[in-house]
Image 1 (cartoon, rainbow, N blue to C red):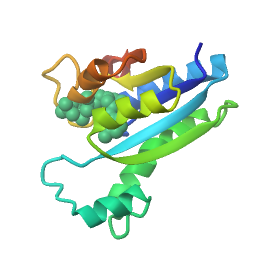
Image 2: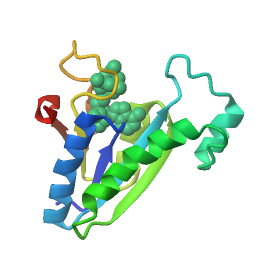
Image 3: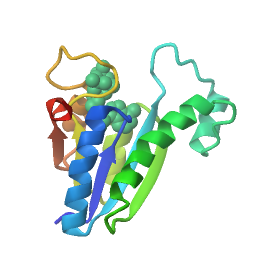
Length: 153
Ligand code: ATP
Ligand code: MN
């Protein structure tokens, strides 16, 4: 049933609780984990030029080390969580609009389950679901397991 599990992560505490669920499921099902961090191209005050975007797409962050650190620590947390289990983890960093990239990745990589947090890094807690999660739910037919932020407390 579950051979390829996608865990989109922004490195937040809530996403990391979702990581624990994804790792447990992957261990039980013998599934491969795909850890995906999306560099949000539309983020306010982000201001990347097309040249920089092209470089990041090729995995070259250049002087943007802070961005690279964020991405690597987010997907790296999945690798660490999976370490003691015999799970294959594929780390992926992409540039774009998070929910589009996540839904597109799910559709094009034989993903049969997405596991993600109810909230992320923004710290805004007024909505039931973060906007990325809400939009992913609307954008894909792949089953999505949403792990509530309160489990992080
Ligand atoms: P908002 O971004 O709407 O202000 P939020 O940050 O609280 O709200 P979301 O961004 O929707 O909530 O985050 C919910 C989940 O979506 C996270 O736990 C994570 O699993 C995933 N996610 C969010 N942003 C990204 C990203 N840039 N790359 C990969 N996954 C992400
Ligand atoms: Mn967010």
